[in-house]
Amino acid sequence: MRVDTILTMGGFGLAGTLIGWLTLWPGFRRMAQDLRMRDWNLAHLRADHADQQLLFQTLMDAGPQIVVRLDALGQPVYVSPSCEAVLGYTPADIRRRAEVDLTRPVPGSRMTVRHRDGHTVAMSCQNRPLPNGAGAMLILTDITEHARTEALLAEARGKLRQRVFRDPLTDLANRECFLETLNQLLTDRQDVAVLLLDVDRFGAASDRYGHEIAERLLREVAGRLTLAMEGELLVARLGDDDFAVLIRAAEGDSATAARARDLIRALGEPIEAGSATVDIGASVGIAVSARDGASAAALLRAADIAMIHARGGGGDTYRFFEPRMAEAMEKSDALRRELPVAIATGAILPYFQPLVRMDDNTIVGFEVLARWSHPDHGLLSPADFLPLVEETNQSSAMFGSLLMRACRAALHWPARIKLAINVSPVELQDTRLPDVMRDILTTAGFPGERMELEITENALVHDARIAREVLDRLRALGLTIALDDFGTGFSSLYHLRELPFDKVKVDREFMRDLDTDPEASRYVAAIIDFGHALGLEITAEGIENRATLDRLRELGCTFGQGYFLGRPMPAEEADRLMAAQQPAWSGRTRPALGVGARASSS
Image (cartoon, rainbow, N blue to C red; front, side, top):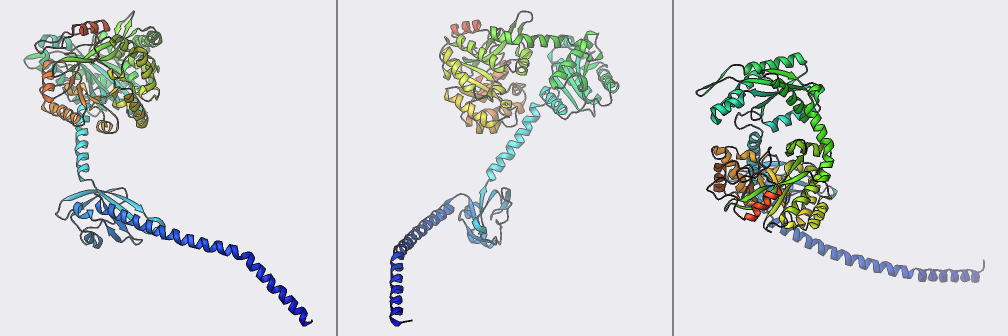
């Protein structure tokens, strides 16, 4: 090849290289710009990281909790200075783990640590792993006071449960305990029999010898039944002279009948009560779960029908429930069929029981209670038809009709007079309830500030989130929210803390023997003090006598309700009471009682 040709080719090669470099130069320039921008971002990130570290260190040093950072090997590399205030040890003491080791608690658990001065500190621990296996952050909180409070509350709940589920006169289980136990046994598919016992000739003895002898009789009956039914599931006093026994029915009717005879025999001997010798007896009705009912209410109703037949046969005998005895059930079925028409036509009437301010006996409101004006059976109490209302899912319809009529009746009463009405569990779980309330109040022209809704604890056990949402919306309408039957449930304190209540109603069970039983008085005083500490108003239900009223005043109770202060009354009588504009009770004489309910005092 010729030299000039090679030079010529070489020239073209150099030119091509220069052209290629010129083509790539803009990319190199952008790369250099990107590198400079990255260096700038890194510098700012380092500065932000330093600021965050400083902030983190400041928070950890100043916080009330103890923060321990562990490295990948589980060794403490940082301990917040708060450990000295909480445990008396310096961060260096904790890192050495010479006297106390905070690095091995179970995550999410509680632990006890001995303070340097010797006393015990209860702590909770949270374990938060660091990214990439770099260790963990332990956050320890002193919960000593919280744990002590929880222990006291647990003890109080246990005592309250025992009190609420025991009959104070006989110390037997009461109706609530009986029904709860029976429902649980039925849920567990246990074959059981209910033996319902009525004490024969008790009414005559009570009328003849008086209240004190009657109570002695009931206590003696309870003792004899307990002894005779030793080993059975439950012996309970349901009320007055009605007792019930739960037994297993797996051995058949003959074994059940033998236990019924044991009951009758136990009460067959005369009872010495003070100076009186009383001859009583027993009528026993029997219902068996395998054939007479799948619910506690159905079994108790069947046993009651059978007991009435036993008593009608002369007493001192027993009867098994039979379908032909079910005339009472036929009445219940008839009421169930008639109920929708009664609601639609306004036969379910609002009755009004006074709510009285304790310090000056002034009526401040009325609780609205339902009564059914029946053409054949007269005025029916809620006990006769409310279970049917709930069973047939007509609670909302009856609630709306009842409340509308009550609002219209009370509209012209003084503006300071409030209405209170109970909300069923079904209604509280309905998110439409606030809209229904708004529509009723708007239609009736009744201010929301004059309306109070009473919520029982069993209405709160389903979905607390929905309950909270509904209650918040109701309060936004101006309504007052009261926790009814306080003290009978197991989560009363939790509900007061978590839900927006304005008032507490102390259950009537606590009013029994309030003026004579120091323990009962202490419980009620504790409830009243607790409610006041939370800024809540307190209403005592079931005030039946002057002594109870006086004791509640001494304890600082805000409001009262009960037969002694006023029975449930129709709207016309409440109108006259409001027109008179007089205190409910002058303090010198018993207040005039309105006409009304036969079942309960409120």
